[in-house]
Image (tube, rainbow, N blue to C red; front, side):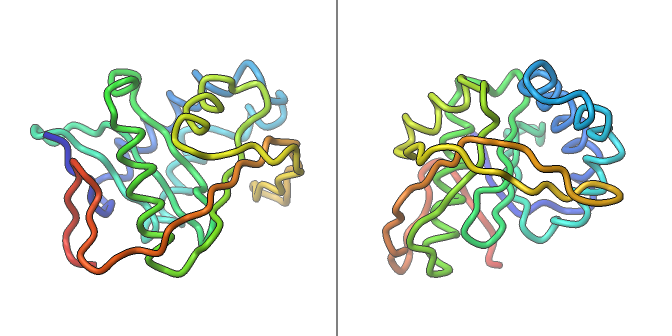
Length: 175
């Protein structure tokens, strides 16, 4: 059984390691060297701490970390899984959880940025009903400034959340 819940301070270290490893796997070969140098384990830890109130984590019944997502307003900002969790439905559950949270806060059209060349992620988002709207320049906050990166922009129209609606296969405490 998988549970999706709010992240806690105790989750930061394992999530930072998961994020670092998954980012290296999915992005290191397709993104500029300058950005690769910035994306250290420490950088991911700092980013998680800064966004902790918006981080949701998926864990298995033994408490092992499977993946996480971050929602920032109308943006599905981050979605990363452990290598072992890929293809198991964890990503779809995290996306559904994020969509439900965004719709519940009044978001009508959600968006996300996908690295150009990350074809595996693009296929997944399209399978989940997201549609590529073309390229955009993402302004990534990095230590010392902003890093501009051209990305694919995906969007999805969300249905308003219904009272008592839940994400199948996920549970969450009262927020």
